[in-house]
Image 1 (cartoon, rainbow, N blue to C red):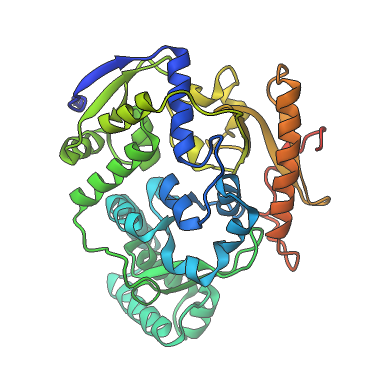
Image 2: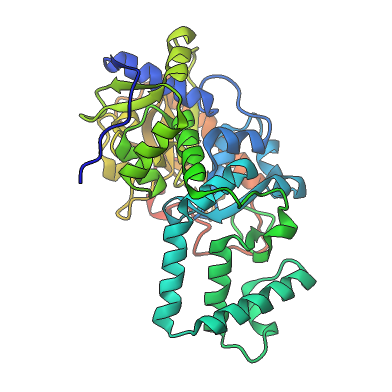
Length: 403
């Protein structure tokens, strides 16, 4: 059954220049414009609707791209930061690090399909429900006594229980929000995966909100930050159905504008107050800054149907890999002009241009930013032990042109 589009308060058609200006206005609000970046990690996570955290380097690189100084990014591992943020699986079953006021809605709105997957794995493994219930209770008791523990520590201390059954119970409890995950390493290239009771680590996290309210809050937050976006963009980003997106937009109650752009045949949607803000803001200030975006950066992953807003003539396969992950990208003027990687041996950023017509001034700015990012990544690098499976940022893309 087809789903009717959301109710709108008006329609505007933008030409290529106007659409590009609107896109840069959106990026400006996320700390990816010409003005200096944010001075705190909570401010960045709120502006971006979280940090994509499925790859170890991604949260740090995402913050580094939007921070006023590298000192801001180093605060990612501070205890005060951990109290304000939580890392959980939510949109499209992917790890995100979110501020608590957004995390509850992201968790509840996406819980139904994540919980279903966890329960199916339990059923396929032939584990009785009573066993999973008992193991969950024992895990909660253990973490209540000891605090943060790694999954192998949990398995070792639950004597008499099969490790695979413990892992299934642990995953279900995490998906349901009973347990909280935390990487207790001190570097972007390492993971020390631990779990603790969510009620202990984040007592302010509200997981009692209803699913419809949570979905409305999440979708409003998405269009607030990433609009204008199409319905397909929103379904891709959230993992929710088109019907759920439209229903959420209608329930939010904020006047919505339909915008027609060169990015796609389908209309995109934007809250009217945000559109009014754009039209009254005037041209974006210059000069335009260069930004080295993270692997799976949220600014790129927010869209599926309207990626030409930042790809232009660059082929999608140059900026996304075969499984749909956004590659580490260099953004200038709102456009992807290169990919970059971390050279593990030399501890420096390498990059490769997509566009042969990048001007000399742009190339000079890219070289300068590559040096800044290199210093920032070196400062956040833990040389004690490298997680070889996750530390590199696409080493096969290491460029022949180094800064």
